[in-house]
Length: 151
Image (cartoon, rainbow, N blue to C red; front, side, top):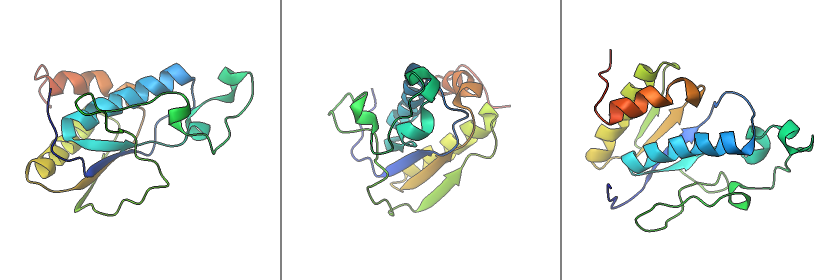
């Protein structure tokens, strides 16, 4: 596993598709968390009240003062540092702002590649992830393992 000396960059999941159940949303966060581990970054996602579908909670909405750690604690494997960056924290260190330019996996791969170059040169980035994670995640993971070329 990759050992990160610092985690100053941020992956921000801004547009994530639709509301869904807890297991689905934790899987989406897990996919983004894998990217964060690869890029030595932290993750910012919308609050549970924005991502969780009330129908999966007996029709009740999740209060917006409830955070993800009420459901699940995400930490880095190597040092147990927190993975999620809470919106209440301030983040203004970024030297490069990268946005995915579509929902195709190739667009996401190009943004991830750009972020990795910034990270390798000691820079700090914010990578804004747009779109439905399920549309690109498997192909992107194949690319990251070297099994798929960007075309």
